[in-house]
Length: 606
Image (cartoon, rainbow, N blue to C red; front, side, top):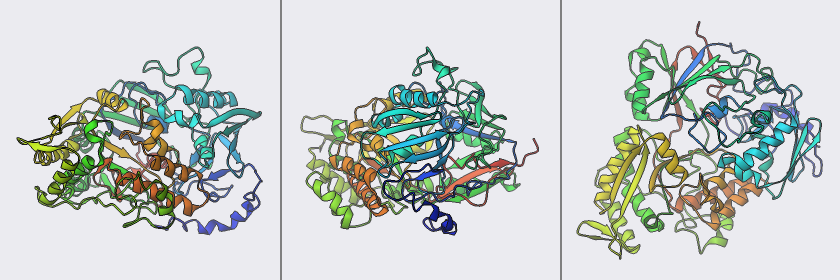
C-alpha cells in the first residue's frame, strides 16, 4: 500500500503553477478543487490513477441486492430504490478522485472557481454536456436541480440548501452559489449535487409519481428495463456525452449492469454459486475462509480478490434510539454494551477473524487516541466539560468481553450501572421504580440471517440481566418506514465515513436533525459538544486543526454510547467471474462507489 500523503509526490512539478492562485484574494477558474491544499492531478491528466484508459468495452455485470424496490427515483423520500441507481445513471458538476481524501475534478462543469474564504463557488458548464435524451444541460437545469432537491428532495439534500444564500446565473454557461455561513466544504458539496432535467418535470410533482417516473440523467447508464421488486437492467448509453473526458476515460466499460433481487443473503449467495450472479461482495471473513471452495472457484471460473484500503472503519453495529425513555440514560446504554460479549459473538459468527470497531474513525489518522485527550483535542473539548459523557476527556475504551458465553465480569458491571439508573431485578425481571419491565425490540430486514444470529446470542445474555429482547424481522418497505420514523429501540446500523468528513456529519449526529422525518441521526444525538466539533471540522483551515476536530468528535460519539459496535474489515473481499477484471492500482478508498463497477471491464466473448 502506497503512503497516503506521498503517493503523488512524483507530480510535484506542476504544483508551482498554483502558487499565485493560492495567494489571498486571488480567484481563478481551475480544473479541480481540494478540501485542503491543491488537487493531486494536473490540469492535463489523462485518466484517474486507478483507471485503465485502454480498457475494452462490452460484457455485463450481474450483481444482487436483498429485499426489493418500489421506486426508481433515488432523489425523493418516497419509496425504496435500488441504491446503485444514484451512482450509475446520474452525474454532478464535478466528480471525485477516490485516490485522494476529498478532491473534485470537473465533470458537467469544465471549471470551478472560489474565493479564498470559500464563501462562494462558481461553476462553468461544459459546452457539450448532454442528458441521456440528447438535450443540452443548461444553467436553468442546474439552478432548478439545486432548488428542487433542496426543497422537495430526499432529506439528505435539504440541509445544504439552507446554507445557500443565493444561486444565480453569472454568464452564458456559469452559475454561482453564495453561502450564508463559514464552511469550507460547501463549495465541494455543491459540486457533488446531482443535476436533473427541468423540462421533464414541468407541471408535475417531483416528490411524487409512480415507478415509471424515472428521472432523466446525464450518466453513462440508463434504465433499460425492470420488473418491480425483482430486476433492474441498466445499459450503457452508446451516445454518452462524457466518454472522452479525462475523469471518465477508462470508466463505464460494461455494456450492461443487471441488479437481481433476492429474499435474503443466503439465497443470493447460492445464486452466485450457481452462476446466476457474476459478482459478490463478502463481508464475513469466516465465510470467506470456509465457504468459497465451491466448484467454480476450484476450476478458476470464479476469482477471489482481496482489496486493501486506507479508509476509516466507520461505524457498524446496533444503534440505540435515545428517544426511547429506557435508552436515554448513558448508564443503561453502557450496560447494554457490556452485555454484548463481542469476543464470544465474534468467534461464533466470524471465527474471530474480524477485529472490532473501536471508534467511528478507527483505522485512520482521524480516529481518537487512547487515554486522556491532549493538546488541541483537549482544548476543543474543555468548554463542554460539564456536559460531556464520562470518558470523553479522560479516555474511553469498549469492554474487553470474554471468550466464554457467560461473561460474568461485564454482566456484574452492567448490573451496577442499571441499579444506578434506577433499574433493579424483581422476580427475575428488570424493572424501574414504577414497576415497568425493561423490554426492548430490535427490528431487522427480513432475510438478514447473520444479524438475526447475533441478536439471538445477545438476547440470551440480556435475559441474565432480566431484560427481554424481542427480535422482529420485517419486510423491506416496513423496515424503511420504521427507520424513517425512528420507530425502533435497536436496529442494525452502518455509517461509512471518509478521510474528509464534513457536512454529512450534521446529518448523522447534528441536533437540528433529530426530529426531521427521514433523519439520518437515528440514535437521536442532541449534544452541544458534537455540534461544536462538527463546526470545528467545517471551519478548519489547516490539516492539523481538521484532524484534531475529527478526533474530538470521535471521542464524544464513542463515549456517548449510542451504538453497540461490532466488527470491521481492513480488506474488501470480492468474488467475481474471471472475465471481470480491474486495474492493478487500486484507490485508497478501496472497494467503494467510484471503483466498482466504474473502472472494471469484461473480457467475455459475449
